[in-house]
Length: 258
Ligand SMILES: NC(=O)c1ccc[n+]([C@@H]2O[C@H](COP(=O)([O-])OP(=O)(O)OC[C@H]3O[C@@H](n4cnc5c(N)ncnc54)[C@H](O)[C@@H]3O)[C@@H](O)[C@H]2O)c1
Image (tube, rainbow, N blue to C red):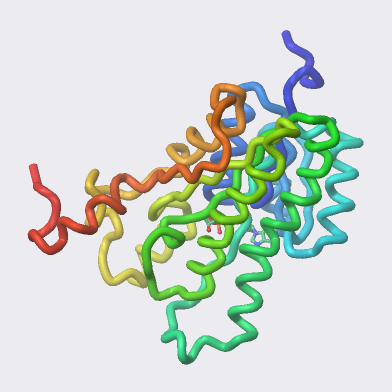
């Protein structure tokens, strides 16, 4: 049996729930040693406990805390080969003219600046070792338009940040890619669906006629984190069950039904 110390180390920030949790579970199954990181210490511990690995609790928007955590993770778990940033918060749907600036700044701070902070803290170590792969989770909100100004702007920023860092760190052997999920059936979204907080089933607007499953996003994340995608950097891979391409069919009555 392989010693767990031989496994490459992956850090998943936002690994305590939803898509990040699915990424932790799949990466563990595929032979990675996963450090589960989340602002919610209990959630991180629950996932890490299942995988018999280490949990780390910190706020991705706190630069000093992320720097300390990077130091600890590298010391206690090992040199980080892959970083996945899946931590984010969502915003209430309000008319933009009623969106408080404090709320805009809170969302940008966590979703965009937090991603930069994590990329800086772990990326500098990867650059020094001349090896590493970073996967930032963006969203279809980055591609189109939706009534979530701060969230969409943050995610568009995450895609651009990803391209910039891919250009900057490529010659140091560090790849940086993004994954943009469509509506994904994580427990948080399931609750919203049950409580009738969506005007319609998001799956109705996709080519495949359904929402995305967390493991389907995790598959693409793990691919980008691994050497199987060794010539890919600066990409934003969309995992949306065909939401984006189905939009233009709406004026023709929607995609063909079977
Ligand atoms: N679920 C979807 O439909 C969907 C669609 C598109 C994009 N995304 C993106 O996928 C990623 C994961 O979303 P999800 O749906 O799994 O959400 P989720 O709420 O289920 O999980 C997010 C995790 O991030 C953690 N987190 C939040 N703020 C944090 C902070 N400041 N520091 C550290 N951890 C923090 C939370 O505690 C939680 O465990 C996010 O980037 C989100 O924007 C999700």
